[in-house]
Each structure stands twice: as C-alpha cells, then as structure tokens.
Figure 1 (tube, rainbow, N blue to C red):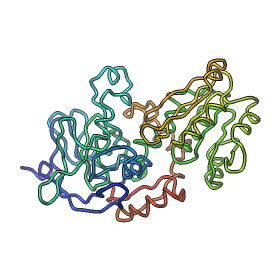
Figure 2 (cartoon, rainbow, N blue to C red; figure 1 turned 120 degrees about the horizontal axis):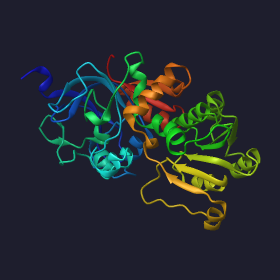
Figure 3 (cartoon, rainbow, N blue to C red; figure 1 turned 45 degrees about the vertical axis):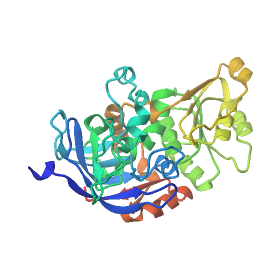
Length: 376
C-alpha cells in the first residue's frame, strides 16, 4: 500500500457541542475511494455558515469537523477520478450529486440533495471519512469537504483546479462566500450596465457583491451597513453611496438616492427585518436576491400589493448560482487583473487561533478570516 492510499493522521478543529469553542484534535482520515480526492489543506476561510452551524442554527449533527472554504494541493485520488492529479492546486466548493435534474440543467447549487451533501454530517451513504484515536466516527463531509483540518476528502466535482499563478492561501473563500456575493450580482440578478443596486450588509459577501457590481458597470451602487469602517471599505471597492442604517432610515435614503427605488437589491445579512427594508427599497420591476442565512424557520413579511403593483421580484440565491468549475477561475482571472481585489477583505490567522478568528469575525473586526494550515 502506497503512502498516499493509507489513512492520514490529521489535525482538525472539532465543534464538540452547541456554541462550544473549536477544539484542535488529532483524527484519522481514510484514503480516497471512487471519485474522491484527498487534499492537503493549505488554508481555509472561516465563514458565517460555520458559526451558525457551531451554534446549531442549522442542525448539523455534532461533534463535527466544519470548514467549507478550503484551498490546497491534491495528494491522492480515487480510482474513478478523471481530471485531477496529485500536485494540482484546488479550491474546494460546495457538494452536489452531479446527476439530478438540476445538476444536469447547470444549476448544481439547487441539487435535490444539497442539504444532505452539505449539512448531513456524513457521506451520501451515511459513512464517515474521519475517526478518532479509538476508531469512533466523527461527523464530517461538511460541504463535502470538512476543511477545518490539515487534510480534507472531497469529490472531484467540488474540487476546482486553479492556476498556480494565484496565491493559493488566498483562494479558499472563493469556494463559498466570495462566489456567493459576486455570483448573486453577475449570475442570478445579471445586473446591467447603468443600473441602480443596493447591497444590504457590507461583510465579505456584500463587499464581493459591490466589487461585482462595479465590474458589470452598475451606475449607482449603494452599500448599507451599521459599521463605518465597512462602509469606508465599500467606497474603496466601488460603492458610489453608503448608508449607516443605525443613523438614518435606509429605505428613505435609498429612494432619494435612486430617484424612487433601485433596480436590484442583495440582502446578505440574514436579518429578516433588513430583508423587508430591501424589498421596500426596490423600484418598479425591481428584483432582490436573498443570500444571507437566518435560522431555519425564520419568516418575514411584505406588502403583497406593493409587490404586485410594483412588479417586484424576490429571489432566493444559493452559492451565487455559481458553477464553481467555471466561475471560480473567472474570479481568479479578474483578481489577477486587479479588477476584483478580494484580498482586501481577508486577515490571516494560524490554525490554532481559530477561536480568535471566530470572535473577531462575530465582532465585525475581520471581514473574512483565513486559517493557515500548511505551506503552499
């Protein structure tokens, strides 16, 4: 048995119970099978979704290894892998079956088994890839990767090969948060040149939407947040107007700036009250996309006649409607050209400082933490 087909000892950040701090533990990761790929993780982003799962707002079984914005180097591949080879640089994105009607239709983020493959805590067959020293399984397969670990097991269809010209340690957040914000603007809403856009929430997802809106030529780009430093960065990244919602009514301000309402809105906070503000900020025939994730079961309200008479649309968006294998390389090209400077959103942390990274993210001091696990 070669070294790459043996189980791997890994250091992993385990979420032991609801709301508990992450714990660095030694676990064991099995060899890849079928179309699986084992990746030596160089760095991984820490996303809001990791934290809401830690706090059980999404019911992933615990204890578990989370992490879903991994970037690294392919170490070993299963016998059915066709396009990846050891040594390839990859970004890990979301899980999908690749065979259902939506996957076949080019909409893998709406895979019929999306929740199971990303939040189920195990593989599609109920099996686990990670075990503890006693051989007991640990919940894993989070977003088909569980990349809060020095090695991760994914499938070929959610490992995106990327150019070695790009800094691998930076790229992980493209697998979820960054492609979600940019894709909402570029893919789902298809924001048009000269249009008016309002972005609610200037975190990593919202800032990515702002950069994308500038790339596609929106004329009015309005950023809404309650933290002045985020709004300052939004201006730097392309916002033409900023609104601090703690000091003024964002709906009134947006209507005044946009002469009656915007053409497009992106709601990235997951706050249902903010989502209602976004709907009310739309102009005639405006459309708003919801990308922020509130706790399961949260509801909001809106004026049906306002929606009806105004011809407004509400659209749910998962992963920016991105086909990761094509969209992530496009975003990397834009970054290398200096047109998509998402590096301005990140701050790097040693893996052992994961709890500090989480605290800084929750306080709004860091937009996108990236955890460093190994050398490129």
